[in-house]
Image (tube, rainbow, N blue to C red; front, side, top):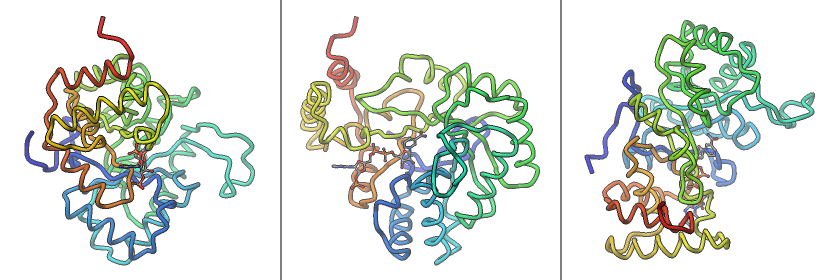
Length: 304
Ligand SMILES: NC(=O)c1ccc[n+]([C@@H]2O[C@H](COP(=O)([O-])OP(=O)(O)OC[C@H]3O[C@@H](n4cnc5c(N)ncnc54)[C@H](OP(=O)(O)O)[C@@H]3O)[C@@H](O)[C@H]2O)c1
């Protein structure tokens, strides 16, 4: 594989590191602000400079925890690319009047959510804002208006989506003059519908790189007891041996990155040794047969 260096995620940028650090679980890591800063600087040193957030992570706490760390050394902001998301409204102490989880892509909500994210993270601009989940009530004209305002005020550099179907992606793109820059989707050996439902085909056609979430199925790859999980784990172990002792997480990252749409895996671990191991997977090359053995182990049957 090529050198581990920043790559443009769409024909109009931005440049991201080939793997991304996810901060969904930051609140669980129980780190002091100094430890959070050390972790951030350690993965930057590895070349993993893009960080993935969302307003809702940690019940609306993770962006603040990250911002506290950044405040200890504000110049680190210049070394990273910050992604955050909006549009999921969670029932939370942070929103006492809310009765039910729902989605909101209204102009007002998008603008307010970005202001909150900027203030919690302590940054002036997001490199990329994603709509987190498709909203059945999305009015694409209204969203485009919100993106235009955010762009005009210099609060967001680029826009993308997450968990969108190709037609939802097309709808929003039809109203937005600039290119959406990614679709962040789930890709792991237990769940890879996007390989077959047209999502990755669309991105490959548009030369837009997907961001891949929960590549390790949220840890289920290590401890899942379903027949599928056991079959896949056995296959990953076998392939890891063939690759000279690669661990199963490394084989999974290599499997995700082997797809020609060039997904950028988002690493979910708060353990820097595991982040280092993930990065090393960038140098692993799976053969087609190895890639399909994982497919077969997951589906439980041979290809048609
Ligand atoms: N757009 C979306 O809808 C969406 C949805 C979910 C996630 N995301 C993004 O994707 C990122 C990654 O998702 P994820 O956290 O679910 O990723 P993941 O890599 O599938 O799961 C991470 C979990 O696996 C554990 N783990 C990692 N290596 C392990 C090992 N060798 N043995 C046992 N456990 C291990 C980690 O624990 P340790 O920390 O102890 O290593 C952590 O709890 C998130 O941070 C977020 O940024 C986006």
